[in-house]
Length: 178
Image (cartoon, rainbow, N blue to C red; front, top):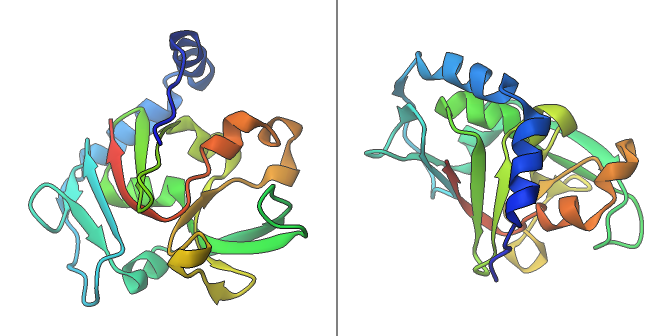
């Protein structure tokens, strides 16, 4: 399923995000370089407007590489679980820095064919997380894993809305920076 975003929503997002996210991303692009290669099976591929790669024009990550970026987490209620859960993973902002992203949006592609475009400014403004663990356990594919983009929904009332729930892609396998 592909989520379509109305043009006026895109314009509002660009205005709301301002140029800050783009400026910080451009600053990172000057570093261009090569990432280490995955030692295990890759679980995430990032392509598009990035400068740091390890497989042609792509940046591939296995679980240890993602964990090496630094784990963070939070506890929050979600519409998918009947109690608060703790998510742990890599902040999306940190992942974008690691790949030298210089776009304004990220398109997330899931194993179940779900596709959603997410403004990169969400990563700084709302602390979006690429979660790998729920309540201390690696998330399996059959339960929203191995990677799940989540927001700290309890931190701001605006995050408890369909807009942000739809940006919360699970079974994420690929990100394209645009």
